[in-house]
Image (cartoon, rainbow, N blue to C red; front, side, top):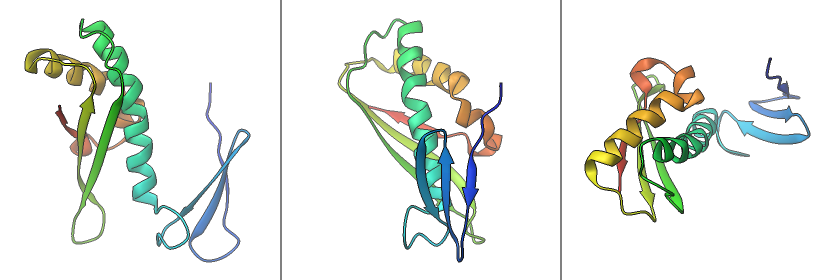
Length: 127
């Protein structure tokens, strides 16, 4: 199995991406659309949501209900990602030990997290 994206940039730093029947725009300068790093953070957080849900089921935490993730990417002096952190809020009341088990499992399941440098694995807080 492969994943395919067709990306076109007519000029400047904005790129239109065709993903199956969907179209997204990413602007490296962040003027016309989310920039590349914002898009990566969004993809990472979007991947982490189902990983949390499955991790919660597998670690007996039950249904997490509504999940909100505030993703933060800290940049180094070269404007490259140096660190990523997630602040996760859920409707479920999960104790600290169970939350740690869910986070550990979610890290194992998240495909985007798997694709980024190991040093950029999200630092996650769970509320």
